[in-house]
Structures are given as structure tokens and as C-alpha cells.
Length: 179
Length: 167
Image (cartoon, rainbow over all chains, first blue to last red; front, side, top):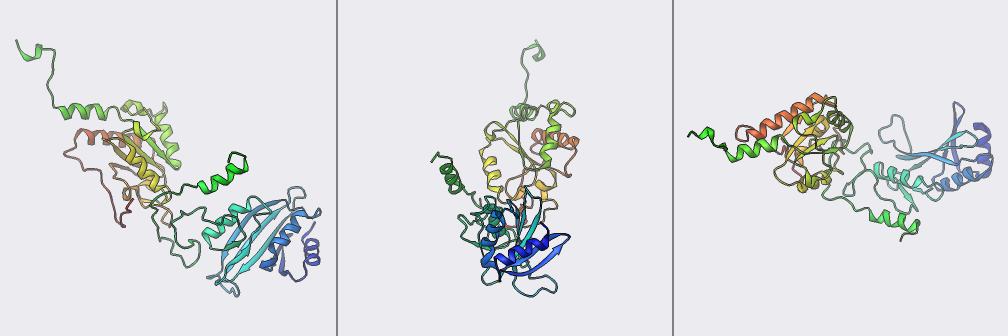
């Protein structure tokens, strides 16, 4: 399915959710209302003609030093691919500086759990509804979000003791019936 | 009857100890990056670290007396390195292998410790990214010299340019 047909299908299903769109070399790129992102992605995944069954990545963006940018400071970009049909799409939602919140999609894709934790850790976007939104790359005593443009890149923060990570392990053990 | 005919020899006790220590270093590699791959080739037969008596690589700090830190050490990794160093029995020595372990290397950013000498005392530094295997052998030889001559060589030291972290 080409980008135009894909866009028409999404706009018909979610009128008002699409704020902007572009066709980048045949690949659809759309900007969405933040509150509708989980519903749109669920539709993209479950619809048989779209069948976006793979989430490639979630990218957090900080636009504070971006030339010519107006509007919200933060953005989250969702990269989707259909393994069965071979097409891709790129979805973007924005979040304001004072309330950088985006609904979670961790109930739709298993890898979204860690992707959202990374975006939260590095950029500081809060994914509302995430089951365990805590730092994944930086250590647990880290203060701030290092990939924000106002974070000095050489501000180092020492760690006094490592985390046990048993809170994550307990969930995994329970899932596999080990309790 | 002269002393040379007796089945004994006289020496200093610390000299005998140093002779034994320097020729039977048991390294424990703390490999976190590509330097660890280079260390593997030093152990292999082409370069052969056993020519210097240091071939018995232990992966338990309790059984090692040479900590070979090969690779980038992040702040998340730093308490682990500190704990491993403290678990090693005395006497112990530390070789900082490669620029990342020695100074942070080109990782001048928020995650990487700018030299392991901010966490643990270091005896010998190796430059390079990664160093040649010959450089590691030279570091072993330098360390052997240091073990043999503790009075005339500098002690292992911290280098706390930035505030030392109170682990």
C-alpha cells in the first residue's frame, strides 16, 4: 500500500487526529495528536491491509535548539514496519516542555517497553500508562536527561551502588511461572 | 670448608618474594571493550604472555593478583570495578590498558569515568586504542621491574583531578 492510500485510510478512520503528513520517497510520515497515538498504532497493527506488525524504534527529539522550529519542544517518533507487506511508516507526536507526556504503546508491542524507557531516560518524555517507566541506560542515581539540549555533555554523575534489578527480574520470573 | 660448598644460599626475604611474585602474575581481565579482544591475542601462542609467567588467567578476583582493566569503564560499571578490586587479596597490581581505561579516551561525555585511577590505584598505564599486544607485554615487563624494585619505582596511585567518588 502506497503512502497516499495509507494516509487516506488513517484519516478516514481517525478524522482530526492527523495534524500533518508528508511523503518521503514513498514512505508515509504523519504527525498525530498525542492523545490518539495508541489508538492509531493499534489500528495500524491490527488492520489486515496495513499490518504493521513490527515496531522498529521509538525516537525522542528535543527541538529546543532546532533552527526555525516553532511549537512543542519535545517529540516522539514511532518507526513502524510491516514484515508481511514490506511497507514502513513514520509517526510523530509532540509534547510541550511543561508537560512532556505521551500515551504508552507498550501494551501493543513488547519492545516498546524498553524503547519508551530509553526515550524517557535520555530525553525525559513521560509515557503515561507504562508499567515500569524507569531509567534503562543511565544509572538510577542519575539526575536529569542527558540528551536534552540544555544538559551539559560533560556533566558526570557518580554512582555509589548498583541497582539489584530484582524489581524487573521478579516480573520475568512470574511470567515464566517461577514466582 | 667455604660457604659455597654448603647446600644453602643467602639472600633477602623480600627479594625472594618479589622474584616469585613477578614471575607468577595471575591476571584477572576486566574486559569491557575492544581492548579485551587484544588481550586475548596476548594470551594466545603468537604473542604468548606465558613467556613472562603471567599466563594463568583467572576469572575470579579472589585468585588473581593482577587486575587488567581493558576497556571503557562507565559510571554504571564503576562500583563493580571497585568491588572486584577490593575482593582481590594483597599484594595486587593494576594495569590500565588503553586510553579509555586510562583517561576516558574520546568518550568525553556524561557516562564514562575519565580514567579508572579515579576509582582504583593504577600501577602501569598502556596507551593506544587499542594497544598492540607488544605494548601489553611491555607493561608486564614494566610491572615486573616495579615489583622487583618497590623502593625506586612510584607507588600505585589515584589520580583524582575531579573529586574522588566516595565508594
